Amino acid sequence: MTQAIPETGARSGGVQSVERAFALLETIAAAGGELTLSELSQRTPLPLPTIHRLLRTLVTMGHVRQLPDRSYALGPRLIHLGEVANRQLGAMAKPAMRRLVEELGETSNLAVLDDDRVTYVGQVPSPHAMRMFTEVGQRVKLHYSGVGKAILATLPDETALGLVQRSGMDARTIHSLTSSQALLDDLAASRLRGYAVDEQEQELGVRCYAVVVPDSSTPLAVSVSGPTSRVDDAFAERAVPALQRAAREISLALNAR
Image 1 (tube, rainbow, N blue to C red):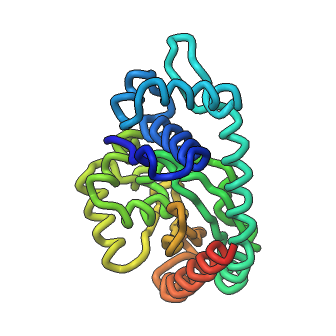
Image 2: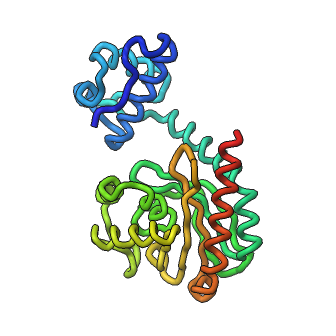
């Protein structure tokens, strides 16, 4: 798919160059993190000399690196930028997540769509000794995580399946969804009820409820999870409204900046 890049004359020179540079980065990211010069030329409307000039600048800055086979990959400085941005997301969401944990007594996680996976960017742990532990910064697949499925449910089926199939639908537990149709049925149910459920699909003995954060500039979801002995149907009746309220609070915090 051709990346939307501003046409000549649409912006002043400096702004246009910035937009085009970021569009190139996003094009490389959408392709899995690596493209040749000719592939970039095919996927964008920019002239080859312009692409080459922008890439030289991005390589000098460390945002892109040139590989031995002459293809271009995302550079190490982007990792640092992403880590800082993710930490800020987690920090802004933490007050709402703390209130959620105080109300429900179970662990809350915040995750952002990261290419074909989700990355956990915030957590407030449960006060219980027996709880789910997910490390902030950990990347997990979309099809077996509550946060991942909540985000997938906001996408068209074709787009959702494309992301999942790119990373593979392996079984994390015996309950993980491993077929496209099973996933599509699950996403349809999530859309209907307004939240996603991880039914011991990521970790045996753990159930998770998740909702997307509305009006977020990047796909974001918040969840609450715990042992199935505590996180049951009665818990869900309390948890879902609280989760939806927390998601709205997080949205307000993000959009106030």
